[in-house]
Picture: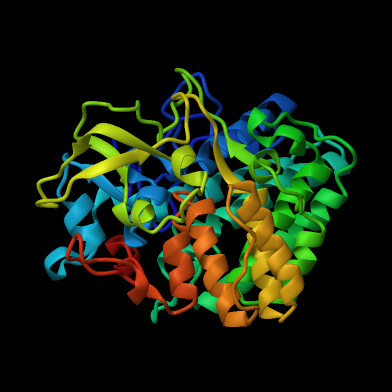
Length: 453
C-alpha cells in the first residue's frame, strides 16, 4: 500500500516497515517488530539500536529509484533526463513541456516531500524513546539526540528547496504531532530554524563522550563516533549557511567540519555515504548496468557533455557513452548516449555530503568576501585534481562565482539537484538549457494537495 499523503508520513520503527492508517498513524504491520508504545517507554538498548537503524534507512529514502530527489531536482536543473517510459509525466511534467506544470499528486514527486518527513518522524520517535528510558547514561542519551537532530536537519533542507520561497510559506518545522502539525514557515525562517537545530545537535554531540552506545552503518566510515558526526553536522551546517548567504557562518562551520584543502580523488570523495546491499537490504537505486537494454533509465543531459572542458577527467568518470542511444517518445528526435558511470555495482554506496562540496563552499564564501587568492586556491584544488589547468580568469567576485558554479555542475552532478538550487540562488534559472526538450524551468514544486486541504 502506498504511504498516505499526510502532512507528516509516519514511519516504521525498524527497517522497511510502513504505516497505512490515517487515524492511527503508528500501527505496526509486522508482529515480530515492537509497537510504538513499547519503545516510547523504557526502551532497551536493542530497541534503541533498531530505531537508529530505522533512522538510517529512512535517511536514504530520498534517493529511491524513479521517485528520487536526484531524478526530480536533477531534471529541473537539466543535469539528467528521467527517461522512464512507465509514465509520461517524468518528461512532460518535470520538464514543463507544452506549459504543463508538476502534478502535486504524481507519486514520483513524493521523495522530495514525503520521504524527508518520514525520516524526521523516525528521528522524533528515537528522541522521545531515548528521553523516556533509563537504559542509557546522560552522555549516551546526548549521542542519540545529536545524531537524530543532525539527520533531521539534513532532511528538512530537501523539501525546503522544493518549496523555495513559496508565498504561502515553505515548509512545516513543527511536526511532532502528525495530525496537528505546526504552520508553514517562510523560507528564511524555516532555514534559520534548521540551522538552529544543527547547532543544538552539535552541542548534544559534544556532550556524548568518546563513543556512541549504538552502531552506525559503514556509510559513516571514519565519522562513526560523536566527534565524527559533529564533523558531518558542521558540513551540513556549512551547506545551510550557503543557502542563507551567510558567508562568515559557512566558513565558521567549515572550520569544525571534515573540510580538507587538499587535492586528489581520495580527498574529494571523503565524506558520509548511504550504504546499500543485497536483499533483504535495498540495491543502489542510481545504479544501471552499462549498455542496459531498457526503457527505464536515468540519462545524462546532453549539455553536460557538450559544455565540458577538454581533458576534464570527471567526464569519463561520471558519464558512460553507450553503444546505442536511449530514446523516449516524449522527447521526439532526441537521442541520449550517456548514462551514469559512477557506480560499479548495485551495492555501491551513495554520498550525501563529500569534501569536494566543502571545498567549493569554501571557495564561494571566500569569493563573496572578496578574498580572491583563497578562493582561487580552492578552485585550483578541484581543477588540478580532475586534469584541468589552474584557473587563469579574472579575480573578481562575479568571475569567480561563474567559475565556482561551473565546477559545482561537474563535481556535484546528480547528487541531489545542486545545479537547479545553485541557478536559483543566483537568479540564473534562465541559463538552464531547455531548447532540446522545449520545456521550462520551475522555481519550486507544487505543494501536495493534502497539505493544501
